[in-house]
Picture 1 (cartoon, one colour):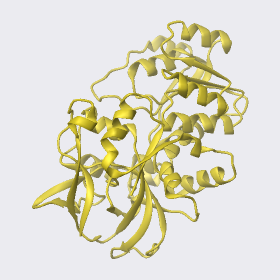
Picture 2: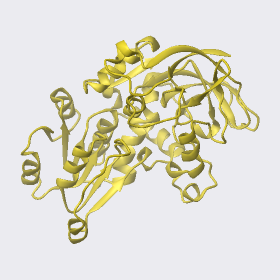
Picture 3: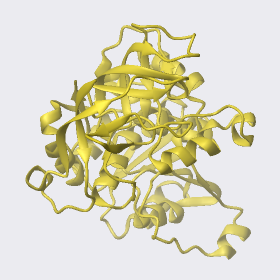
Length: 374
């Protein structure tokens, strides 16, 4: 079938993106689903910093590629062997397919699935297939999803069926922003009631982590960002204090406020200075969690003496250390109960033709979670 999709053919084009047009709305061919695969009608797709990192070249990927990894839609057709989904089912797509058989999967850590990571790196679906084409040229899949398109063929392992009547734009957030941010607080850090938490970087993931810290009963939730409007929003969402990251006296202020530092510092900005700041404001015996993805060539310098003598923990969190089939329905229920108001994080609703404009807003640091409506 022929579909409209946002195709990236070259990384690192100059800004503004609405002029350089790194994402070209193109007509591409989409093959039917193969064994273990599903055809999904994409209804909504969120713009995420991970997509921006591919556009800018900070995360090199095989090109050409249809981008997008945070989305929700409806099942249209199931390939051979898919018996637990049917046409009309609502699904949230997740960007790390899990094979269920490798050691991390068997340990209950599907976010670290080894075949899933290999296929994502190669630009294929789980199992190695490519279902997208531009003429005779194969087109790569973005982390097994490629949802900046009218339709997507994905592995069954990339689908989470959801039983809810929520708007698709709301559901899309649970595929990445909520799954990653809430999971970083709940699954990775295991934030405890009464603890002190700092969240650095208030994008969709950072705000989700902040909401999770509030819902977990943290006594202090400190929001840190360079954008004062986002800091103001954070205070309305439960942050007990907020600080502009550009203040050079920030570490001293936070250590004074928290009598030595926070129990958990959650870094969601994907920038080395933010991670260094998160480490600096974590107390002795505390945990610094990072879910940001800076350029792979970037390096972090830490003092091993502090790591040992202060019994500090520096912990990575990928997809919020989630089990998507378990966590996405849980987080949706929390939202429906009013305990996780992620709808407050939604920005503009855009048509596919305005996608480059949306990434300009993100690169400027002013956007919330803009959603492409398809």
